[in-house]
Length: 414
Image (cartoon, rainbow, N blue to C red; front, side):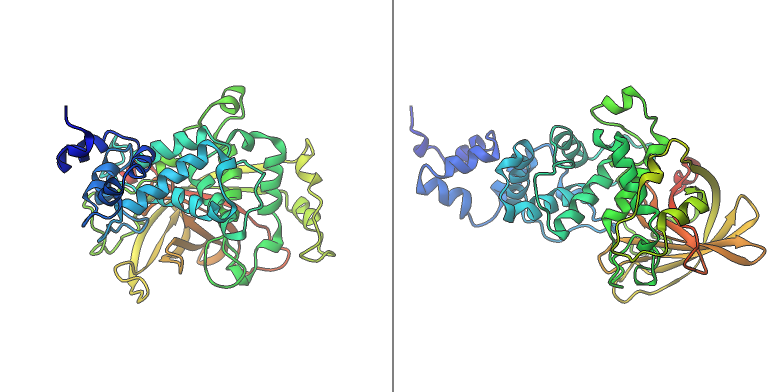
């Protein structure tokens, strides 16, 4: 019988493909010839085949959040990053402080770069989503408080949490109070962040912590707080990961006027609390850095109203965006429940997210102003999460969260 080092290269490569990537790395350390074969080959065909053996989406069929494919795929580095993230998810203590950002970014990339579906009724689920969901369910990463996260790492984890959906900890009353305390704090809505879930530096970049708190508030109104849901390993609902896949019938949006899928019937759900309670909570005699008393949200008499209305939208025109070719600003208009008027636009942010802005009112008068972010990939069924206030943006005006999602009959026509 021939020794392994006497086997033809093609046979040795076939054997390697049966190994877990971690075992491949270990095998490469046993001999310089194996190391060169695995790490210094002329191309990445071995790493490509090794990647495709894993339970992930084929990157050649994946689209970015803005609906674009990849010209170049770095098979080796991508797989190595994913396998390292897998190791961390199974043992958080194995994560070095200087790699936390890379691990979180790897997971965000996996859930944001997936195969699209061609129709809302398609059953082709992203394998990336299945894998990440399963790994996060078995890990405490989203709730882990043993790390001192940097601002960037905090943002990445909040984005991942928003895509994932509710965790068991989200059902704790104290967690719900934290989210309400942030969303209803008027200090978080200024011209500096366009009165929406953006950073206060005027950059237009998304503040995922803000989005995640909005997601928490809205989700708790559509997922019953029962013993079954609180103890469930995973709650599957319209604001969780399976709903973040793009719906792309033709696969190419570059020639689509309505690339964001604006046209159609949407359900707009929103929350608000008593304006007097809102003013008491915000206490205008304190500075923006003074902690607010959140006791009001824990009181048994506190009421947060959840309502939904239906909106018919259509595209009015587009304006080219030189920073995002093929993704022009979309100007739209429509009606609310058949009478009120709504006008707005969709555009791409500097950090390549999809920003929705719209105002609404009656008899030609704009009253309400809303700013939101499409969660998931372009045209995903997840919809838009954001915040509303008045068009006047006066100091004492109310604020609250909203969720805008396309209804099933409209989604069929995307």
